[in-house]
Image 1 (cartoon, rainbow, N blue to C red):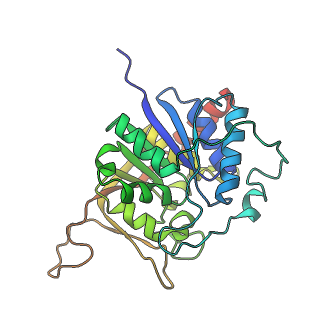
Image 2 (tube, rainbow, N blue to C red):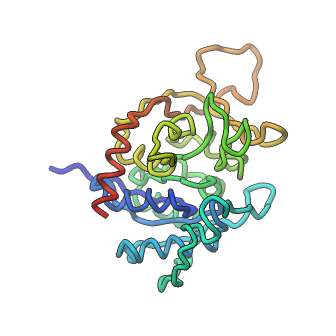
Length: 285
């Protein structure tokens, strides 16, 4: 009997590297993409939704639902700036694409995540390729979500390397550090793939951040992981900093680290294998 395909929801801010990850997902027989949820990051949320619908049309997958996510951060309520200088003002390299025919579903991203995790308890993996705001909202809205969701793979953080927005922080975590801290301490099965990993997966000068995180859901065997507590600095000069505590040392005082649930942090990657998988699957799409 063939192994059951893993049901995956991609939480995305497309983004050229998100587009690559989404196309790789569609060519990955190990998984079934059951929805896209959208978030700010590379572009603002409205444009992320438009781009997600466009990518589904290009891939002839318009039957897959798109749920629009939050436009603001979880605590500050700040509308976040997009990174148009990296991905073009439209997020997809200024291709001047036609407006997509499809529309997002009525549910918000958080509502869709909660619903799918309830329908398929323990079977759904969320791959968060942008700031993890929608996932944090789902955790806040539904006290059972952290148990119902199978796994949350987060592209984010910079463990023992410098960040990419400043020396301390990686962009997805920096944009909503409180949301990241909520996800990391929720008790869900969380795997974080940080810059320390994605900077090893390079395609002629381009870091394959998003496809690498997606492949952590598709083929976990190409990574090794450490388990421990991760907390996020939410203010000040090191806002967005991810700190990993391996639980090997016991501290006398009770602190914000004590009794927090462990998550997995990717520590090594078989970069040639990831590159090979990405290229094979892109050429098939």
